[in-house]
Image (cartoon, rainbow, N blue to C red):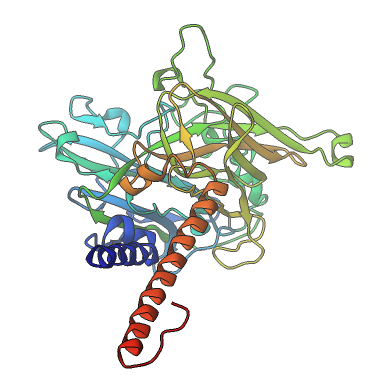
Length: 465
């Protein structure tokens, strides 16, 4: 009877574990989530003007931590969110770096003038050499989920990863365009060179003749064309960013960040390995206007695909795309056509911040079940980016962010052989439900047996037993 009771206690423990939220069952309650809200240095914009600055040594949580989410938006001096149809947030990115102790970097240091002996990049895990950020979005920032599910987090401040004699700091790049009174709002946000009256880049180098629009034409302090006679006040703005994190400990599994780019020029060769050094990403591209016959059959969609050999392995934890206005979605596939993650744009329908009509105000995200999607080293993945080509677009982007974990939570490791797809997850749920039902029946049977035994001892006949 004692072993039977022990079995019931074990079953009760299993049922209690199943009843807990996944974050409690696999992670524990000791990890307190901290939240901090920071402001970028102020920037001042008037109608048609552009801010594209790099701010060094910005505020960021200190210590050995695991970041759980990072969100940002443009606000005015009163703290009110600013709508995209007034100030378009082309992009913001946050980059980690290590600086030699005692070297002071101001908010506005020119990266090109930094001494490389004093500055070491602390970039993400790849794969594009020129995309080293850990966090970054654009107009879609307000309605794009960025939280990292338990028990995962992005690890920072690990003393073992900070070079001796250096300290970890952060750089913030904000690219915002004031479109109040603009002759062509979309053209301003797409950085059309003729609207900016630009023929050279920010370093004075002539633009190539076929370059019609993009980042080279809307650099810091450029001016987009506004309607004649339009007057608007210059105003002070900030990027407000919110960081959530927990203190790093052994219960947290680190994730790595990889960024793919549809403009990646990587090509498979006999000697190619897929490592970061082989990937040269152009970041932006143009969408040509579709032919008249295209609109008649609904074929006005520009579809780009590239194949990439993975230089890493791990489990997909999170995925999201970054697109500009006109985007219709992006996806990551296996070579056999199996979809791993798709990310679709959410377009606004009104005037208020977060719902601006004609703008992408969010991107859908992927949160696969732990262990459901594994990436193998050397595996070929297909990245796809789709845009409407009903009109011409310049300077659009087709980036795809993923977070990858090297390992699964320990309970999931035991179940991984069974839990491979959504169907098997459903089967597992049914099996646990059956276990729970058997447990309930066992408890009732024991109680009934005990009651009938008592009745028999009191002189009543026990029937059916």
